[in-house]
Amino acid sequence: MISLYARRRAVNLVASTLMFVATAIGLFFLAWILWTTLKLGLHAMHWDLFVKDTPAPGTDGYGLRNAFVGSLILMVIALAIGVPVGLMAGTWLAEYGGRSRRANVVRFVNDIMLSAPSIEIGLFTYAILVAPMGHFSGLSGGVALAILMIPIIVRTTDEMLRLVAGEMREAAIALGAPMWQVVTQVTWKAARAGILTGILIALARISGETAPLLFTALNNQFYSTDLRHPIANLPVVIFQFAMSPYDNWQQMAWAAAFIAITFILVLNVCSRLILKGTVKRS
Amino acid sequence: MERTRAAADRDLKPAAEENRSAGGARALSADFLFRYVALAMALLVGATLVAVVAAIAYDSWPAIKVFGVWGFLKGRTWDPVSEHFGAFPFIVGTLVSSTIAMVLAVPLSFGIAVFISELAPSWMRQPVSSAIEMLASVPSIVYGLWGLLVFAPQFANVEPWINDHLGAIPGIGVLFRGPPMGIGMLAAGIVLAIMILPYITAIMRDVFVATPTRLKESAYAMGATTWEVARNILLPYTRTAVTGGIFLGLGRALGETMAVTFVIGNSDNLSASLLMPGASIPSVIANEFTEATSKLYVSSLIYLGLVLIGITLVVQTLAVLLLGTVGRGARARS
Image (cartoon, rainbow over all chains, first blue to last red; front, top):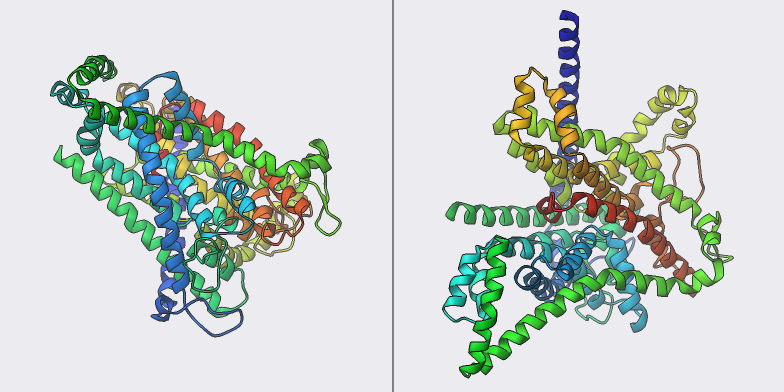
């Protein structure tokens, strides 16, 4: 009996140690990636990044202005398309669709789109926009990013609206409010922190997406805000610069990576704070 | 909750009718518009999956006509010059890199999830959990950059050791013999493993934490060790969701593009050794798409995309079905 007890304790000790080691490995890689990006990114920071455009291959220049502006434009397009579509679709699911079969089919498809490889969204946008138009364009890049955002917004909007108590809707209806006012003025308001969090998370998710942009917005060495033509953007610039043999290009890739990660982490922290704030209040 | 909504729906109809009779035509039409715009958007979302598959299939049609289905899947040559395209090396590359990732990531995720839910002191749980989740918010392009410029050079120093020790094992040794280049199939698998780790961990952690305390405490009360609780209580109780989480991670690994493109080495030669460079479906599409000049070349690359959709769709459908409503929050968060 003692030997059995000893064996069980030994097995448990080994297993617990392995679990601890697994956690340490995960944290080690996180620290390694963040530390490298921080160190090399800060080292590559320079004022020129924000005021000059990306240099030609092999030249000494230093700048990412066109990429910053391009990325911002793409995000604005993505938000302008993704937020209304995602918000309305999520609202329909929660307020009208309920548990009906049609609503569940939409939820199922949305769940699949939520984890669909982004490269497929890129190919899809290429097929419906770039190929018919005949050339790569900033607009198609924004659409591709919007398609990636929508499932996240639909999911969170649906979940957050379903958390709103039915009594609130009933109270509004009892006062004679039509359904659209019940939704826009009562349930959206009650769930706004959660919905906003979903939008921020979706924005964080697309701000680093590269694969879909390779088939849509592509890249542009020059400053351009013309949506009908290729437009520079941070992720594709990182891709192109990292693969290059030029020292200044690789440095700029690290600077861009550092800025992208910082932006995403700030968005994540904001969304957490918003959610925390509402949980405490209620 | 469900009952109150149904009640609200019932109450709504008389309210709407009343509006009509009381001359509330404006309110009614706004109501109608709102409802049907919302429905249209929901149907649009529901139609995207079909649209994606249809559009990609349509654009790959020229290549399907030339190479057929089996001919393309089994074709071993990828030659843009003579315009002969076969997907076999890339299908193998995709499956092999994802398999390596799963072999590494599943046990690690399990370990981390049990650590968070059972072992860690309570003050540690939230920070560790958030840190692991942070791995999911690092964009894949940064994994690629780090993998190529930082990880691969370090990994090249470890590879001679792998050669000498793992390469000496009879049978599987051939997998681990090769030149120490850093980049290659194994490096891609390792980077992929780190990338999918947070997704699998988040699901496992959520379901482990949600396992009824009564079950766990009964086992502990009977004198079970932490490991015995994890193996005999947590795992059997959450089996379906855990499997779903694993499929979710697999779906991510199969479709991951940028990180793999950076570190896999991009060679269309099949090699038994995992240390040799290879290519996956996403990596070859990402690398060659903008260089593809002829219509057939572009179409063949899109056809590769169609094959990838075929593979990932099966995996994702399984994941979604197995997970049901579990871990939805975690999935949206990342």
